[in-house]
Length: 384
Image (cartoon, rainbow, N blue to C red):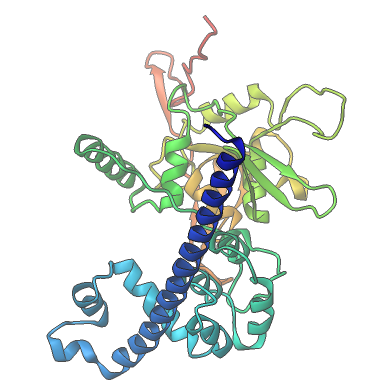
C-alpha cells in the first residue's frame, strides 16, 4: 500500500543527496577557478620574463605580440592587455600576491592596474573587495593613473565601446558612408565625430535639431550630464557649453510647474543665420555642409547675445575644437571674423585666418543691382 510517510522520507533523502551533490560541484568548480587564476598569474610573470629575454626572436617571430598570437593563441588586443597587466604587477606586489593566490581574477586585476600605483595599492585592494569585474570596471572608468578609488571621474576619460555585426552588403555601405564623410571633412573622422554624423537627423534643410538627448545640471554639485538612451553620462565643462550653445530649455525638472520649452536662440534668428552662412561651416576651408550648430562668438557665459552679428554656423568638428581651446573665433559676423588655431597645450597660435567676405553677384545687368549670393531667394519650407 502507498505510504505517505515513506514518500516524504524518500523525498527528504533525495533532497539531501541533491544538496550534497551541489556542494561537491561548487567546491570542485571554485577550486578549479582558483587553479585557473593561479595559472594565469604564473603565465603573466613568465610573459614579462619572455619579453625581457627576447624569446620571440628564437622562434622566428618579429615581436612578442606575434609570438603570443601564434604560439599562445591570443588575439592581438588580448595579447597587448596581458603584457600590460603582467608588467604593471611587478610594481604592485600585493595585487600580484592575491592574483597568484587565486583570490582576484584577471578581469579584476586588469581593471585595477589601469589606475592603481604603489602608493595607493592597499586602498584599491580594500575598495574592490567582494566586487565583480563589472563593478570594478565602473569604479575605474574615467579615472587617471594614480587616482584614488573615491576620486571624481574625468568625463573625457570615460569611453564606451560600440560593436556592429553586419553582413557584407551593409559593411560595404558602411565603408562607403565613412569614406564619403572623411572626404567631406578632408581628414579621417574620429569615432566620436562619426557618431555625431550618424545620429543627426538626415531630413530637413539643416536648421532643425532632433530632441534625442538632454543636458541636465545638478543644482548642488553643478555637474552637468548628458541624458540619452536610458543613460546619464557626465560631461566636461567644454562639452556642456558646446551643447547648450544651440539648445532648448525644458525648465526645472524638480518643479511641479509646467513650463513651455524655450529655444535658446529664437527660431527666426536661427534660420536667418543659417541662410546668411549658406548652410555651411564658416571656418575658412571647411567643406562641411552637414552636422551643423550655431555658436556664439562671444560666449553667453561672458555676456554674448543672440544678435546675428554674434552668431555663426560651425560644423560639429570645429565647434568641438573651439570649446576645447584649439580654435578661437573673434570679431563680428559674418565678414569680420578672425580664426586662431592653437596646438594642444600651446597658447601660441600656429595659424590665423580671416573670414571670406560675402560675394556679390549682379542679378539685373541693366540696373546693376546686386545681392549677396545665396541670400536673394532663400525659401523657407512651409512658407508657401
